[in-house]
Image (tube, rainbow, N blue to C red):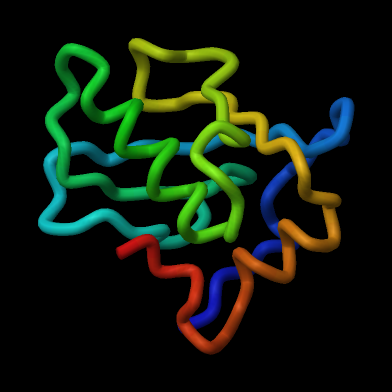
Amino acid sequence: MPIDANAIQLISRSGGVEFGVKVVPGASRDAIVGVLGDALKIAVSAPPEGGKANAAVTRALARALGVKDACVTIVAGTTQARKRVQVVGLTEAEFRQRVGDPNGKNAAT
């Protein structure tokens, strides 16, 4: 089932985009699972302790969006389930295309 990437609120930032994510730690696998309100919902298998879930989020998003891990940064909410993430190297159109890809390439596994 494709993800409605148009529902995600994006903010253009220097050389990239910023958006909200809702993280579900302790899942069976790392994957983008949908949209919650105006945020991207992502499940990660890592526990929410010692920054493990945050590291899993950045890795999973980098894989799903086809960018290097270093291009994905959590800019707010590091200790909360709702976070703000910045991805450099992507336009809004590229982000929406990659997240909403109906061929399943948006699965972060």
